[in-house]
Amino acid sequence: MSDNIIKFPYKIKKTVEPVPTVCELAAEQFEDILIVGRRSDGFVSMITTMKDPAEVLWHLESAKFGLMNGLEEEEEIDG
Image (cartoon, rainbow, N blue to C red):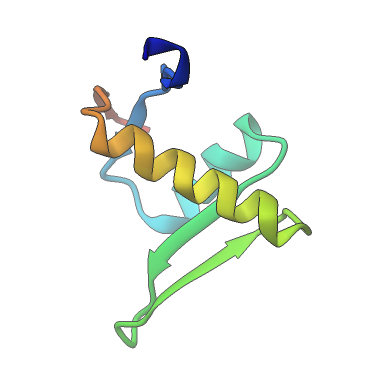
């Protein structure tokens, strides 16, 4: 059965920095990005550089899978 299990070795990076700083950090580190967040009006929205909705869905599901399987967290980033 272990043949079906996808290992999710990535870790979450946490920061107390404001959104613009987080976006700058992401721009330096990633080629493609998917950001999900809560707007000031309370609605959850996303923005992405990916054109294919299937790719977006795959990344969302991969992140969900990792979180549900006890994804480890890294130390907070001080900026």
